[in-house]
Length: 609
Image (cartoon, rainbow, N blue to C red; front, side, top):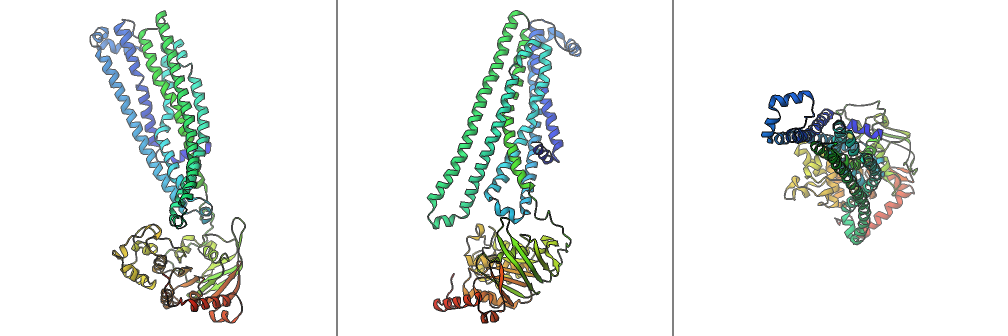
């Protein structure tokens, strides 16, 4: 709990003064609210019953100067007006308290969301590989909102009960000690009951929050893959699965509501019992002549004023329980180390510097965190401006090589050098700024084609954008759209065909004009004729980029300066297309199979899109 309090205290940095002002306003509001009961007591006892005025001497002197009992008896409305005025003044300070606390909490929540979003951008890929996206969304939205609500409404309210008691107890003791003790008879049980409730609610809310995260995760996953669901007619199955998650969340929510219903009913009973004790004891005391009617009136008002804020401690405790769970869930994200945290960067080139493009892998071994071995003693050398093609069955380690070069994952054994400099000792952002990547399943934002293509180089001129789109053989397709390059594509680019998506992603990488260009099966959805046009345009740019190409279609690889064949994480063959055809092995077998299929099916002349 101390760690969470420290987290909350640090979170309030920059807004502590405003919270201090809100607390001061709350103290004034609570203190002023005790004056109307005292005025009412004086009006009943001093003005109406003619008893002595129980007040400090300076108050008595002020009343005598103002006109004394006779003036107040003729103008009893003055006491009523004073009570209304003081209540309004207390309300004003209450408004200022709420306003300042709300402004502070909104600012803190905004800063926390920005901090979470920025932190998630810099967490390593290994973290995102094992973390559910829907759960992350729930933590960044619902959990932050829970913290905001607690900061806005309950942080200041926590002190209200204490301030109210601190003011009420001395006043009641001064008026009548016996009645004061009776007025606080059930205060202890109410506080104990509230603390037990807090512990119970915290555990239930944690379960409910996790259930909501699982439900959100499933919803996000289902909406992302809605086309797959419909293609396989799985709507009923998916609805049933969601119903199970929804029912689990509902059950936890009902559990929370049952606990809260017990608390409110029991606390209502205890508060009314306390009020009844004061009412009965006060009636007997008046009959016995131990207290005056004005004192009884003041006791009733004061007990009513402190009893309900104390009762609200249960609500505060419930929200505190929710907030501590949410703080813990948000803190779990922020406690994760960013991928740059453990870096010992010795080489931090200027962003304006352009890499030469020489790549050297030397004795690279790599295994995932679960122990799965992926690469085994990989060594290769790619000269600047040359092209390397990588071929191999699924799971042979092709994409892992690319991920290591991008420093999405870090190698522990061996060495990777860029222009002779150790990759682990170079700034990640610089390394990635020197590489343009086109993935097999490219990601396009739900923005215009212009924004998607200019993503890696926003300052590029439209002429350069058109040239890059022409090289990627997508300019004509874009020109046919009604809005051209201003056409807004759907989420993840779903309004484009698979081939168009890959070509837009290729244009984006080409426009970036990086020293190193990576094509990770980037032409798999493109028909053979368009593929030949793209490869021809890329060959005309030979020497401009160091190019790494991953593909299963050998026609994509055959023009590379060097081809390597991976199998089970090892390089089993390497050489040019002509050399590999002369030696037995996987490459020659695949070439014969693909050539035979293309001849039989006529794929070289018939588009597949």
